[in-house]
Length: 149
Image: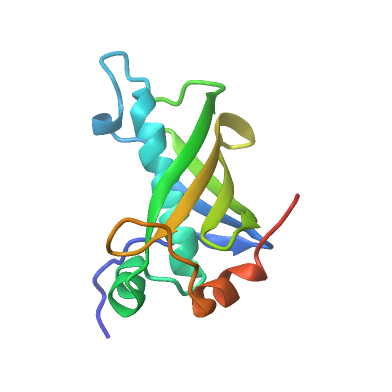
């Protein structure tokens, strides 16, 4: 056993994955406010860590099946500015599984205050970049966590 710290993967609360994120200096602009594009990075980490928590490691999935996730469509609404040193949470929920896609809803919060809201549609593609039907083991890993709430 090692006492080397490991990165956090967050936790599942029902069907919602919650990932803690700290705002670092590198995430901010000259005024100490999170640069708008960095919210997209926080959301990507939330999606990745939700999948990892559900037992889906993206690199292993790609090697074993040839499938990879590609961002197909997304929308973001910025509600409040996050600032240097803020402790945020990224909440990620699966809202729909298609044959070759996953739709997710994400909310970034500071305490109970909504900072940003995302919708993301992620496509399943093969090594050639063309749409690929979601492998059965991936669908099984995800289907119990789809939520309309």
